[in-house]
Image 1 (cartoon, rainbow, N blue to C red):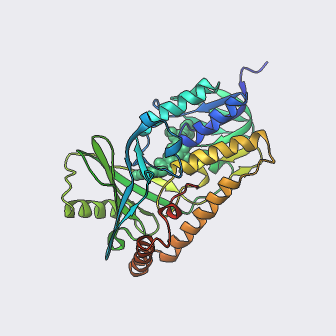
Image 2 (cartoon, rainbow, N blue to C red):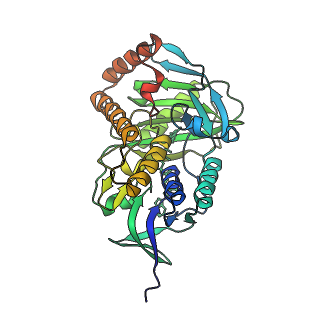
Image 3 (cartoon, helix red, strand yellow):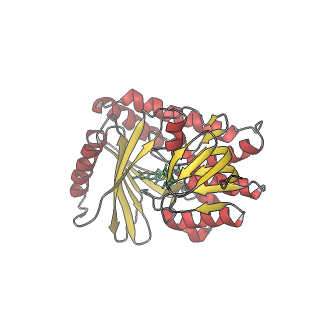
Length: 341
Ligand SMILES: Cc1cc2nc3c(=O)[nH]c(=O)nc-3n(C[C@H](O)[C@H](O)[C@H](O)COP(=O)(O)OP(=O)(O)OC[C@H]3O[C@@H](n4cnc5c(N)ncnc54)[C@H](O)[C@@H]3O)c2cc1C
């Protein structure tokens, strides 16, 4: 008899994508295992911004750090304020929200094992250093450098990089700085949390190297009087090379599927939505994936815009100034830049 434990579905990665998928499957009685390499859930490099139209309105109030009805958008030539009655973006602590999502999944009946780096995948087995499990369905929720994606031979060419600092203090405004001379078609941000702010920058990696991105962020922070001496920079990649999410009995969600926005780097809500959709599809292969399809379309538009600008500063300046003017004149909404509904 085999000593390998069998699960209906094995999910690799306990980020927002993996945990939302696990909670949904477990709730309908499926035997689910989530394997996470880290000891703690949610220790992910992230600015922690969630949109009202995406995840924020589904979170309990106590998980929200700050909320902002106004977004300050500064470009090379213009400054504008986008305003709404609902908070446009809220900030969250990834570890707190991660623990809450992990509890939802385990209370629904999912098995979650932390400190379990997956080292090998085969057509019906998943190996960690100390154990082997078998599966009917496999879900790759293992982020932007996904092992599951490599296992099914889906390459990744379109990838962004983000770098940020946690700056202590009270920051009153949520600000986006679109400065193509420094960040091409990416941007720098100030996302305030309770007693600190995430201050960072994001850009398409093929337009700007991560090293140059960090140098330019330093230049920008100095220009804006922000002191990062003694603070540790945190950086990570964001995959926006979407090439599908169902591959036979193997599925990709979130960053593993390349579902983050190449333009804004927003990836938490796409991860949650795709996690839920994968769970529904595993249970019912005829499930209509309208919400996810709309999100994929929006993601494609973002990638097209990004590719059009490329590393050409002048083109990016023209496009981003047009975007800010359109926001100012309310021709487009902030929503059309986010991934929410
Ligand atoms: C600097 C920066 C700022 C960002 N800010 C925002 C923001 O404000 N708002 C937003 O929406 N998005 C933001 N993002 C993007 C966001 O963090 C990701 O898109 C999101 O976390 C993707 O969720 P996920 O569940 O797909 O993957 P992840 O959150 O990356 O989770 C993947 C999990 O898989 C685990 N894992 C990986 N490999 C293995 C393995 N072999 N075995 C076991 N476990 C494994 C990892 O440890 C991790 O816990 C930011 C990204 C960066 C880099």
